[in-house]
Image (tube, rainbow, N blue to C red; front, top):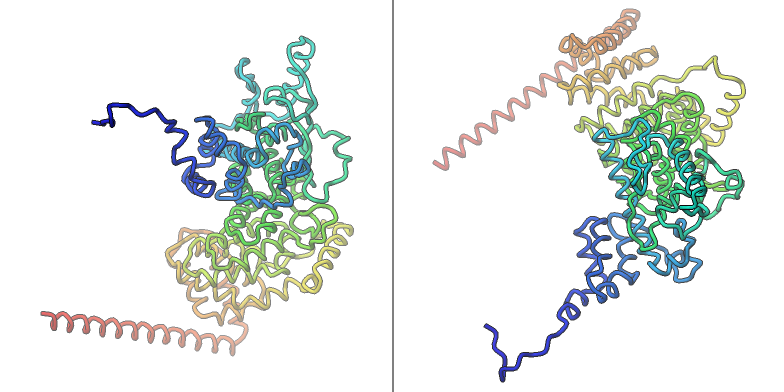
Length: 593
């Protein structure tokens, strides 16, 4: 029961206005928002609870700035790029609408675009996981704001949009504006003229000739003003998150748009790279990705975020799928990005790194991370399928970093499996290809000349320096994972390929337990035909070498007996140690009783 002095009820106060929540400050509110997902944060902060709420948290830009630079986006916000002048709007993709810029604020617009990207990527992933990818044209509901979101063809999507635009013009019921106009509503912007995003080294449908002749911006990647970029990057006039309803065939272009537009935003790069494997499982999407310049974008992210293990891990996963062989010009696009030293940055860049250098550098710097090592070794499997890429991979140290991954993580099955898989191709020196033209050979010579002294070293020389370590690591993996048929299968293939070179027979014979493990595999996995053929072929070649040299055979037999005696000594010492431990334990129990 509440009593009032003198029976007078006090005057009502605006309790909501004087609430403690308005005195929390930017840092405390940002910490509270960290417990919510970005879409929930955006919805919560933009909800008009009161005028005081809008003035304290919705309209000021400081909180939005903190949210942009915090988890999960980690945007690099340089004050020189994000100043208070109108000129700073150039740092935000397609933010040339000063009215919208001043009405909503640059950092709120930035956060809105981040959330928009996040929601679209989640939808793409969900569609891929649940098999909801459209495969045919579907007219959809005529009353929808975006009637083409179920259209499976990007070309038909644009064609349908132009048809609707002409109908609106003829009927006088709709308005048409330039595709670069910033004042169009989402529905109006949808019917704008069609031009596609142009990414360096990429190709879009319906490219505008005038746009393609523009000089590249030396300060950053090129972003074309188009219907696609408007829909992806331009928030509504109120700064709200608008759903991006685009056809499935537009997904790769959309992801490349965001990776180019937000090159320096670590969180956006990670989100895009995480969703790409779901798309790239489809060969048509991989073809589109090569034309859109996705390989360059992935490698660029690895260079711009050299200390982010997560960026590099998901980038390797994307490269696993991008490296799957494609025929024709599409396959050459990936090839050029991996071996060309001038392919991943803007024209005029002084960087001399190609894709293979970037990959191997990442493997060396993050040698202790087993997840990254397993994923990177997996990517090497597909990269090495192309002869020139394999040659460059070996010359730049691919054998060394793969062996180091096995050495650093001897008990990780995934690392051992992927590394052995990569070594199957890497331990076979490339041979001269008769189908190569003189022009292709000249290009290869120029590429290796750009590498300096490394390019002059032959594959055979690199393999000679590593063969002893590789053979030993393979046998150690076979012993550590003797119950894994998949690992033993790949290990026997590596030893088989090494045995094809007679110069390496002595290395295999003097590698401890190599000959015995091959015999053990043959005896214990009789139903694995690949293992039987590879292990049997290796033993046959080694026996032929032994039969042709009596002295070598005698020394090998002596070595086998010495290894067997050593194994018995180790087993005897282990047995004695266990017996002593049991006696100590029994004596301790007696003393306690």
